[in-house]
Length: 339
Ligand SMILES: NC(=O)c1ccc[n+]([C@@H]2O[C@H](COP(=O)([O-])OP(=O)(O)OC[C@H]3O[C@@H](n4cnc5c(N)ncnc54)[C@H](O)[C@@H]3O)[C@@H](O)[C@H]2O)c1
Ligand SMILES: [Zn+2]
Ligand SMILES: [Zn+2]
Image 1 (cartoon, protein in one colour):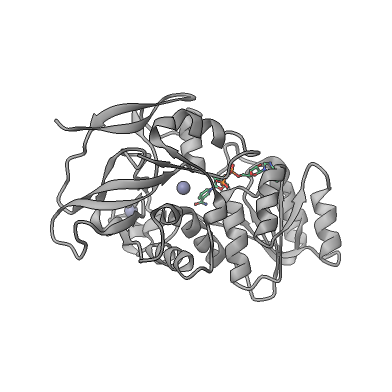
Image 2: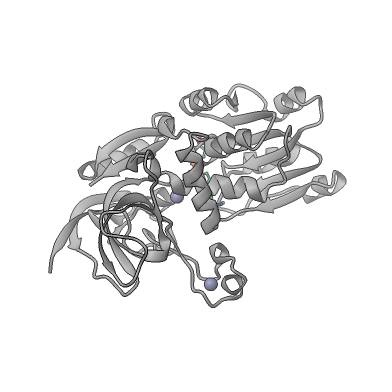
């Protein structure tokens, strides 16, 4: 059996480079020679030992680009094509799938969580999960298509209208990308909070208004900046009890809150306060194939420049270091590996 190098999750806080078999191709799959793969919040959850589905040893990584090495079946793709992987795997038969809403499939699975992913030399990927990387978009930038697609889908799920004021709670990669997309979608001002000065500096570079939650009272500051009314749309992207409270306090009467975070523990939410001011609350999950294609287009035409998001570009051999960098929001935003 031919083997390859892979960056493996072993157990809580333990990752290492090891050898696993090069995956066999099922009919309708392509073998991708990985170019770049990014660490995402979900990989950090696996790393913390708390992901309910991930089974060690696992080659993580669901945000990756590469080149088609081999194809098993008929396809419009060709060996040698540069591609980026849309990592969702849906069942095709549940009610959501039957309605064409594959991203909310009852048993949604992800490449890199439920099967080996992009922290490896090669990955097997169904052909219908591949998107061509247009000429002019680099493999490294294309590896960020997945989080950009999350932001595209999130802003589409919101009721954001041209000229709206926006608050984003949490300036991680997802919060910052939502900020960039919201600006592009016509937001007049985007205020973003975090507790990491490093990430708030990135926010400033993107033309967003940064607020450090360690220094100011976020609710008071937002109200002051919005004429005492609150923002039209609030995105909650930090995932803790403090921001779950702030999301209701910082939105205007009849405004909209979008919860993007995946909460580790269910937060308390003041429904009475929402009721008095007729606040709407929306949630969001992943992206559709169309959102993914739009994310690629927005990066390709320069509307979204992800270069400032890549804080580290490391060989896969340095996987332990990569996870340590990502554990510290004061030094990292997006860590990319190349095998
Ligand atoms: N809905 C989806 O499909 C989807 C997709 C991807 C990620 N997510 C979720 O979105 C969230 C954000 O993802 P990420 O990759 O940017 O994660 P992240 O952990 O890098 O970002 C969270 C940010 O919140 C900041 N923060 C912590 N406490 C804060 C506070 N009190 N006020 C303001 N900011 C605070 C942190 O410093 C960090 O920068 C996670 O919960 C993730 O699971 C959801
Ligand atoms: Zn991701
Ligand atoms: Zn399904």
